[in-house]
Image (cartoon, rainbow, N blue to C red; front, side):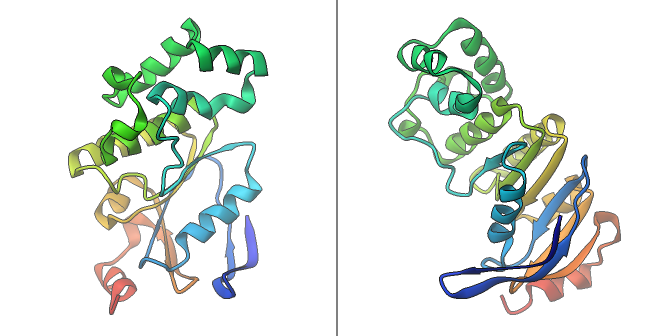
Amino acid sequence: MLKDFSASYQNQTALHSISLSIASGEKVALIGPSGGGKTTLLKSLFKQQQNKAAVLYQDLHLVQTLSVFHNVYAGKLDQHSTLRNLLNLVRPQKRERLEINAILQNLQLSEKALSLVGELSGGQQQRVALARCLYSGHPILLADEPVSSVDPQQAETLVREMLANFNTIIAAMHTVDLALKYFTRIIAIRSGRIVFDLPSSEIQQQQLEELFIAC
C-alpha cells in the first residue's frame, strides 16, 4: 500500500503523491510511456515486500559467467545454509538439480542448464531470470517488462507461466494488448502520476490513445 507517496531520482521527481492498494491475489499490469515512473513504482513496492516478493528486473541481473543452473539457484541463496550453497556452487546437488530442471523444462530451457548465461540469446536470458523468480518460491512477483525480449508466442507462454505460479503479480508491461488480455487490473502511469486505475474490462481505446499521445 502506498499513500501520497513521492519519489525522486537524480534530483528529479519520478513519482508524485501516488496512492494505491494492491490486494493479495491481484494480477496488475502497469502501462504507460517509457520513463513515466513504472520502474520506480516497482522498486518502491519491493521495499515494502522484500521478504515476500521475487523481482524480475528489466536488466535481468544475471551473472554472465555462471551457468543457467547457478543463476536460477541464486533465487534461494538466502533460504539455504552456507554449506548447501557452497556444495551447489562446486557440484549441483540432486535435489536442487531436479527442482531447477523441472522449472527449466517448463520454460524450454532444460538443455541449457549447464550453459553459461553469457552464451544465451536475450530471450533465453529473460527466461532464465523468470526461472530464478519461480525457484525462489515467493508468492509475489514484481516484474519490469518481463517479456520484452521474446517473440509474441513466447511472451504469452511466459505470462501464463507467471500467472500460474505467483499469487500476486505487479508487472510493468510494454505490450498493452498482452496486459489487457492477461491482467485483471490496469494501472496507467504517465509523468509520475496515475492516469487511471481500472479493471482491464472497463478500459476504453480512447483512454489508451490519450495515455500515449505525443510520446
